[in-house]
Image 1 (cartoon, rainbow, N blue to C red):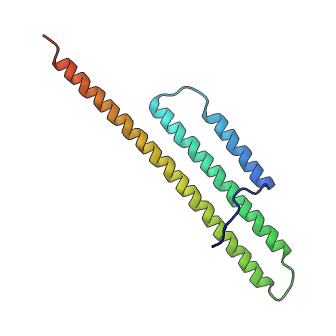
Image 2 (cartoon, rainbow, N blue to C red):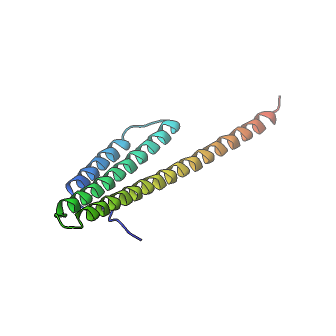
Image 3 (tube, rainbow, N blue to C red):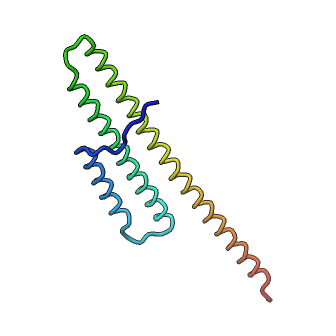
Length: 137
């Protein structure tokens, strides 16, 4: 099984990290309602995941470009080029799978939070109905 180093320090990966930090800095600003806050949290998490995915893809592209530039004019140059591109596609697939899994985790957490909030509202409504119906007239 092949593994890919997801966080190599290249100029592109550093740029991706800076972009992710800028997104996170903007995510904490301002007071919002519960729904807007929930949507903002999801958007921020999605932006962070997208920035990590882009950084990962950029690192994979840089790595394959470096390998392709090192391939000489040997008898196996074509085969080495194909292997380098195959490694890139594998690394890109791993980046996308990691991003999809992270997005699903965020979505699951948001669904659980929404469910808890809905249950809480229903409990409050039920208590209010009991209190209102038991008041003396």
